[in-house]
Length: 311
Ligand SMILES: NC(=O)c1ccc[n+]([C@@H]2O[C@H](COP(=O)([O-])OP(=O)(O)OC[C@H]3O[C@@H](n4cnc5c(N)ncnc54)[C@H](OP(=O)(O)O)[C@@H]3O)[C@@H](O)[C@H]2O)c1
Image (cartoon, rainbow, N blue to C red; front, side, top):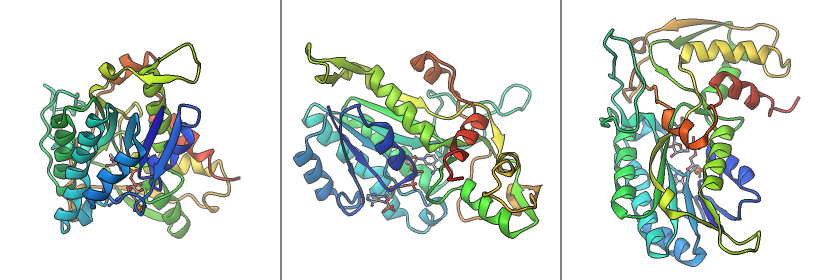
């Protein structure tokens, strides 16, 4: 099986290249090899590689920048995924496409006024440009008619790239006190776990084409929907930051002698260009049923991620 992975330099793409070893022949491409804002190049690469599966982890992820750069965000997040899916369909391939909690407006509440997690069936209503472009991408993939899995994830962090974990570790070394937003709820999700769980899902969708052990194909009928793909449990950015410092303190090389105080602030005290949903909680029941095992908690994934920093 040939798997084309986009966004190889990203948090998820980088981990996919590791995790997918052994699943098939992996062709991982970066922006120079396949620029998602160049739709002709996107078509050409897919036609020449002829993959059995495309995993699109490339995206315009600069949420605040997208507010003033909507056209670029739309072509990369909203249009290119549809072109990939159309090409995939023509050659009998499937597509796995990542999306986001930011397709929702974050207002979902239960009868007591408490936040309740969004299921895959809840109606999206994005409140920022990034979310709108990601929703357009989801719809384009679905409309293509290509066998697809759309995996919605949230609050992604990793040992490399730009993310909240690395920002906190840097600021923790520079300051004794940090103010962090405490009224947005969601699930921090480690890119290594996203990649490993994606691999698990692919293995579940794999079928032997012949008696030959290496001759593996995909059961395309199982590529048919949206799944929330996040670590289990919900928290706020402030509580996540505190947990980062608790765990990092056990690894002397990550932060200095003093653990900073993390003070809670409201979203309104930290103005940024893009509106964020207050409730980013995603329900993982459907994923859990697919995997047949409990989903790793965000706290456990954080510990696993921190183990990957060199001692
Ligand atoms: N990060 C999050 O918190 C978060 C939350 C929810 C959902 N997601 C979704 O999860 C998926 C993976 O995100 P991530 O965190 O791994 O993102 P990331 O670390 O920001 O990586 C994005 C990747 O996309 C590539 N890319 C950007 N523009 C491109 C273009 N025009 N052509 C080709 N490649 C391009 C980047 O390449 P360069 O290195 O060249 O820039 C990079 O490899 C995305 O679909 C994202 O929307 C992410």
